Image 1: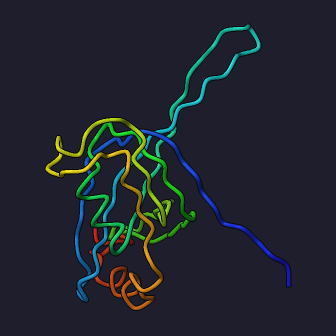
Image 2 (image 1 turned 135 degrees about the vertical axis):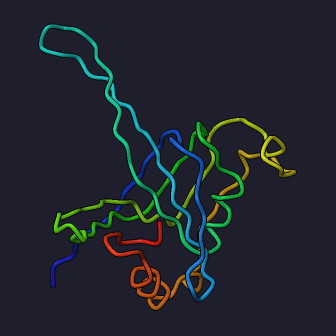
Image 3 (image 1 turned 90 degrees about the horizontal axis):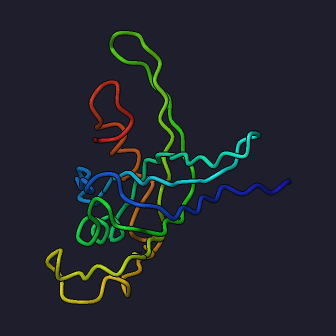
Length: 154
């Protein structure tokens, strides 16, 4: 059997505040966006900067931590796996969504957590969920309970 790797590591800034919801079984699910920038030089010698935008999904305890400590503009490290899903809308249009399912998050900027209602240094906040945080049933239930035309409950 051949091996494969699905690993995404991003360092960037949140493009919007996290949005947290719960599955019918009570598992937290948080979504947010992260922008990453790259600088490159054109063939004419001109430096240009481009931004890429990534959809992030966190589950369980990590979802709760992301919702509590992250805000638009914060610089974060996200590690996870890339997941894509396709569906058809009620109008018959095919849609595809690519997202990073986070399994680790580290806040990288020096803003204090007190600014967000906490009491510890934000740079010390790191989260990695245990395998017990999310069950396959939670994921199936979350997707099956999504509104028609949407792959997740957002």
